[in-house]
Length: 161
Image (cartoon, rainbow, N blue to C red; front, side, top):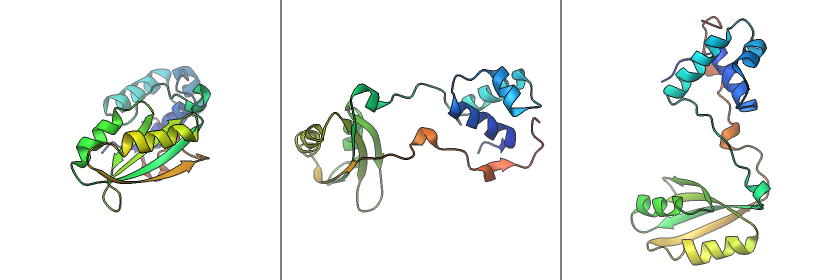
């Protein structure tokens, strides 16, 4: 497990605020740490697979203003069906679970008619799909790219070390 300190947490939070923020701006805002050390820490976290830096597309800005969560029960190979769903353009999230539902997906669409078509004509027609449950999601308050590192994970080492 990657060992965070308070400075790492501050750096990650600044990157969440603006993924293009310069090392010099981060150094100024974190205080008492050089640009070079900021860059080193970012590269170390990227190399360790702790963070990744990239663009996040806002589906609403492209006209995909309706989201739906779809829970799926299957009677055959869960992973095979999940992989097929992951390849579909309008699917933004796919996860396999243990419990009442085998697969959970999130879908973006331009309207509810697209959601209906996708569920009835695409998902339910996949071989092995037994049942679907669809929920329209009118408001998303927090998404995965907004998740912050819990402060309790930071080791009690002096900042900047």
